[in-house]
Length: 376
Image (cartoon, rainbow, N blue to C red; front, side, top):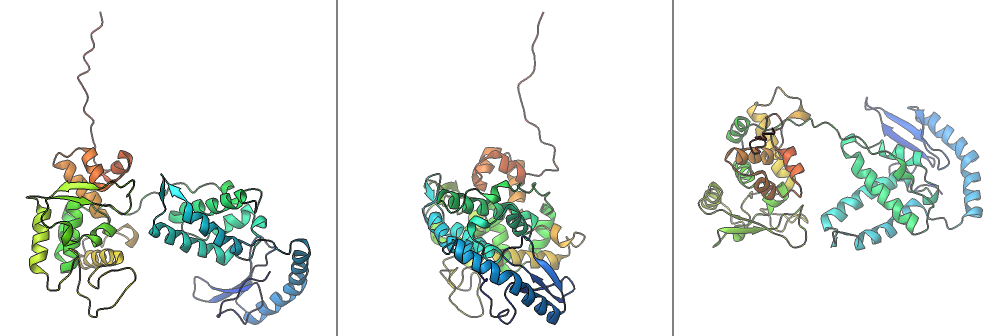
């Protein structure tokens, strides 16, 4: 079965694909369904096309005819995707269905799988096929992609489409050493001075509330009006209808919210908001002043680089907006908060996650009773 050709590649022979090399030059590779690994054909387009045509005449016709005779209705990887999506719609975690955001991320990853494995009969996909596919992704995200591929083949085995799960036999990638450096309080203050009004507001709220980007962009003035104890639904860890509750009366966070309300120059329901040059609809926003999660990160990165405070670090090691949560957690510990209270505010399910946020360069001590055993 020939793979569907994109508009860009439709003039090339079946199974021949162009790709950009590290030097920006276009190269060609040939990948027939009967082959476990693609073969590089170099950068000469004419020679690559000629070789692909010859191989298609030898491999293509023979294999397509055999496939039609032996298994005319074989379910391809692409065919099974819709069945897998239906399974995901009914899948639950701790009795709760998958969120729309999680489903969207699953669908995005599945579509990337289809580019490489789409034409393969799902029962004929090998461990090598899966390994080659996963090797195309960065190390830091490979385990997430592997888990979704394993899940898809688990369902395929259960549905009788294949006899075993080739992806499950691939070892997970060892946890990668963290490269992003922590944000210091001094660094926070320097970056803050170089940030625009919206980014400063986001930084202020993030440092005091320890919430994630998604929750900060969703904070509304109506959530805080006429109440001092705020009930907040944390987007990433929302389970079983449990809200996070905290009191802001007399706190710096309450003062920040009031300051933003007085300084705002555009009517917005959102505490952290912006005034775009043009009003336009966006499926990811329910109001034209609402920020996208990336705007919080990009605004912080722009101020960080403008400050020059972290210029001694490579780009991948410079602290991001997300590091504000870890800095705030450490500051609360310094104030005398318990690790359990910090865990609740961060929205972590385990203390182990919270310990990963706290300053790893600091020596911490756990108090115990006086060891005063006397034995005669």
